[in-house]
Length: 395
Image (cartoon, rainbow, N blue to C red; front, side, top):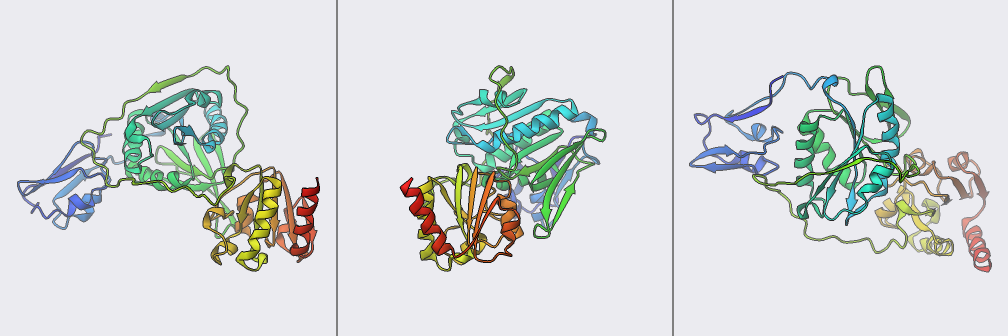
């Protein structure tokens, strides 16, 4: 299998500059009226598509790397501010099972600056950690992450690459898959292995959550998937596990990021972070108006809980999107989930039905939410919630 390559035909190139603006990595410049492509090109094809004079050609392999030449299950261990995010440990738990079924190694890939707790990745199941630690990666710049992960995948040839379907994962992992010319299943809710064919079975809801589709990628490697946080449980760490932490340099020579992060704005409306909450109180369309969410907030405060909401309440503008639970919001798995005035549409259930205990409060006894609820209260929530708050404050 030949390696990919890119060429500019000087006889056809007129130096128009369309390719320079199209390159997502800023690797093309006009020199003496002709396009010149710097080192570090990922062969994504954006410049070729932008060229109206057919001056750029890309030679690509006729077929993807054969499965037998790819090995290892990789988990992208996302960090923020040097702290590894919980979804990374959830994926390592499931990744360990997948790797064992394939009789291969489990590798964690972590990009950041002054990352703390890389040894925890070993304790949670990784055989090896590739740690790319650089000040240039401190704030998770998507261009840099894309460039480096593509480079590493091409060098080490993993069989499977998994990442969290977080804001970051959803932003740059599809770019990696596109550049590698492989498949990606987004927002998976289940992962399994066909060990005989060495296929990753990727399950996700489709058609508004009415059908669960199992997707495979038989002809390309790596097989890639993003998984929503809280879909899998964290495993118990084994601090006696042994593994390797390999530090890899990040060199951005010849590479230019096209975006620059100016600032982070934290959501100060969240008293308790929704994804990490042990208890969540959510309100839906049954709350009637935005002012009534003060009642939800009061109950949450009494329980030391986070405030959630259904999509209907968010669409009405009653509460910010950051509180939305469901298929198009956040997936949560608290010990206790209290649904107030939420009918229980499939899209909402997809984001919270794995909660340990679900309490539903609704005046409609036929509401679908009662089908998944551990305990159901049929009644006027504006009477029930104040009674709960009063009782909690007494206790």
